[in-house]
Image: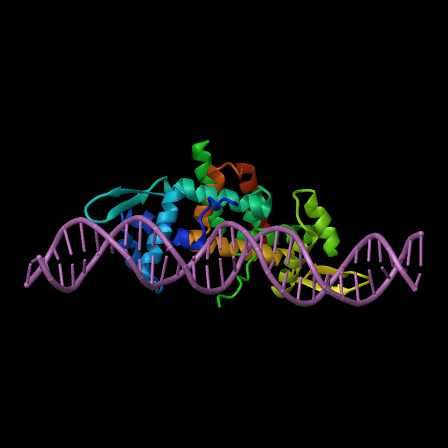
Length: 124
Length: 124
DNA sequence: TTCTTCGTACTAATTTATTAGTATGAGACC
DNA sequence: GGTCTCATACTAATAAATTAGTACGAAGAA
């Protein structure tokens, strides 16, 4: 049996973004946050959060009536993993072509690059 | 019925990479290129290429015995679309945090940034 | 011409991703 | 206690993604 992919799917990411923002959530919290964007069933959200727990993106603890969910790993680590996977898959691991695309697409300005260069200078 | 997503899935991208490299291919060409990486059935490759044709990533022309497939759009355009979709989905459209991750992950060196900054200077 | 090879069209099986319904139980409220 | 609310566990339905098999025809070989 093919294992369920460990990376975040689109819907799962949607939920994680909410968890990252609110930090400590019940299923209902996430459900209500999602309703602001689109129609979804409460149990759908619960199913997804269970999967996220299995995938070790969330951990739950019994609180009062409902479970309270928190992130199981730092957000930065998860995002970094997604970036890594994307760069590997699309650009075979080299980030430079990605950067070129970002610039061409005017997603990055000259100022962004300057700022970053300066930041690197400080850290290294 | 949910429409088939127009973006490239992982397996579809694998095939497109081969098409981009070889430029003009039969199903057999792609099949053999894929076999070097993993076991796959000829008909599987054909099915995927048919889907890619439906999705307008490939176009085919009758040649001799077998169809010859070529890309239907420029590679750059497709990749750019993937980058855009990724930045939108993960970073809500802002590329700068992505850049920070790339640098932190040592995917980008100071030299890469310098090169790019210089390149931008020329173009703008 | 008969057989083998190879290409396509058509069909379908499997798994993940996505969505949600039903059963059930605990606690709040009257 | 009886009823209502709400939370979870369990089950399942559907679609897309992935993989591949079967039927069949055309072309080349013998």
